[in-house]
Image (cartoon, rainbow, N blue to C red; front, side, top):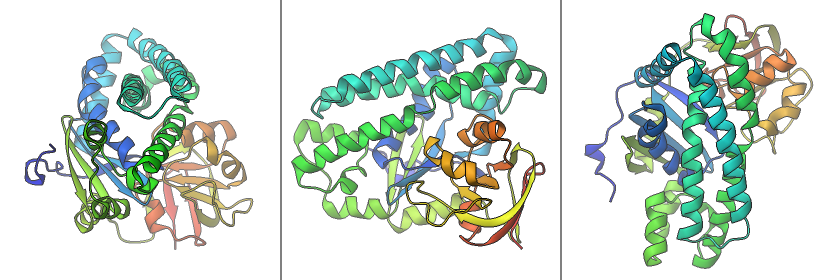
Length: 354
């Protein structure tokens, strides 16, 4: 059983958004367990709390800034004391990328049952720790260490870039199979937690339709050291709003991924398969980019993301294409209206909307 809401409360903010994208609540229930508990097996540090929010097929991960900073500082300190750990994390990420891709290939034609999902979960768990180390260590390394570490970690990061897209594609197939055999819809099944999925495999029972439908519209998982509470409906909506940065005025701030200036029409694109109107020179605004965003990235005059660090997909591609890019704004997709004219000063990490 999950703990009562009163026993698990998110720590005090401010919060930062670690990632955003099209991951199911079911996937999020795995991720939160890894971040707050199992990554310590490899990294000797973890982020004790996190909040994962979900609505209509899209999700986001939020950490308290103090806890994320402590995690990043721990990683950077390990790298300072033992410089070889940088190469170790990079090699482990490549190894686990190959391992999970091989596992997905083996499981592709298997039935969706407790055994196949257990194998999938084990591969995903093993992959998460080196992925998190590679992505977050660079954000806290001193400049002297970063010069040497960045090429090594960036190469590993690019090698692993498609893994989470592949795992979510597998998850969607698994969800579709369970939906078919239970008479539920895929959108209902993707709002299960991993504990509820395990319970289904053991008993054949699922939460009622009303519960799952409410989660599809608004839900959150509040994690503490591997355990979690499900919050849904209006309570989840209120929780998500409490995590958001709230600032007045027409200036949005983030971090520079690649310097430069641009002005243009903002296009808020949450699904790269459905970008709507997008012309050369438009400003791409999204939660995070993934390889599917590359055609829009190439057309864009500049790119703005809610989440991401030095080794986020947006930052890597911006450096490669030499495009002005501001990452980690937290709330650009909420504060910038589609079709609004914006000015981007990427070097200063500033976006002006008025």
